[in-house]
Amino acid sequence: MLSTETIYFVIFTTGLAVGFGHCIGMCGPIVVSLSLSLKGRSVLVPHLLYNGGRITTYGLLGGVMGATGSFTRVVASIGSFQKGVMIFTGILIVVMGLAMAGWVPLGEIFGDYYNPQGLLSRGFRKLSETRSAATYYPLGMLLGLLPCGPVYTALLAAARAGMETQKTMEGVLIGVGLMLSFGLGTVVALLLIAKLADLGWLKRRDVIYKISSVLMIIVGVYFVVKAIRY
Amino acid sequence: MKLVVKAKVFAAILCLMTFAICSVASGAEGEPDRVVCDVHAGPCRAHISGTKVSLDIEPKPVKAMQDLTFSVTFAGEKPVAAPYIDLGMPGMNMGRNRVILRSAGELVYRGEGVIVRCPSGRRTWKAKVTFPDVGSVEFVFDVIY
Image (cartoon, rainbow over all chains, first blue to last red; front, side, top):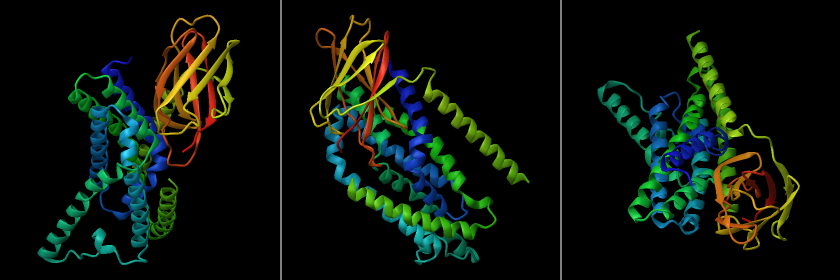
């Protein structure tokens, strides 16, 4: 049996490794969509908030797994909710794609239509930016519930670790700790993808945005179809 | 100019990290033998260093996201250390999912585990059975979602 320190390290490196393999493939489209919707604004804070939200959900789920010591029971009870989150994510990506291309006038949602003239307008824009960045945290929390193979594997480890503890609280703490370690490991890859998708350094941004919009709509529809079949 | 340098440094860091993670993930060991089988029909069988090894998973049909019992039978001299199973998908890192096996009779080892579900829809999984002092073999099979 692995020592507690070793298991935290193993779970962290697992997060790091699956982040660069699995997460880029599965969560990459979401991260890219979120980056593109920022349209030139700094991606760092929103994405840190998004990842913070995602890891919070992982930690909460880890706590439940550690407390119950039963992976299958917990997963069965959140299965239909996860399907709903997957459909929501697909629709969200489609809406972001439509808004980004300008085919649907949803710019206000992303805070693009405020003209920063005058003190009041500038203040309002600032508020709008803060608000839209802050929404990335609850969004991350919600999307942390997306069904994902490696997340399931980490939750399985949390449930097993919880099963071996004597007290429920110990199980909760180890479950939370393991899932936080896993989540932190995945952040590196997703932040890099977010930064790569930040098109601030490209000259022909409009063309890239149009192409990306179409791709986002396709990816969003794909998510919805996958969710229905899931 | 400054942006080009930034992009190059960024790309270099990305390549280095990917290389480092790939090196850690692949390990130094050689690839074990791979046997494709129908786990729903009965035990999967193979040889490790000339000794018969079988893997059975219950209950059948084998479904993802449910508690499963893994049984490994070794038809040779009793190994020094108990075997274990690493579950994963061919060509996809799903994280470390190890089933610890314990002796359940003469040359039979048993343990509990779960095969998780991949939202991509892929159903092919592998179970790498390792006897620490003998060797390992990979059984590849489809599961039901």
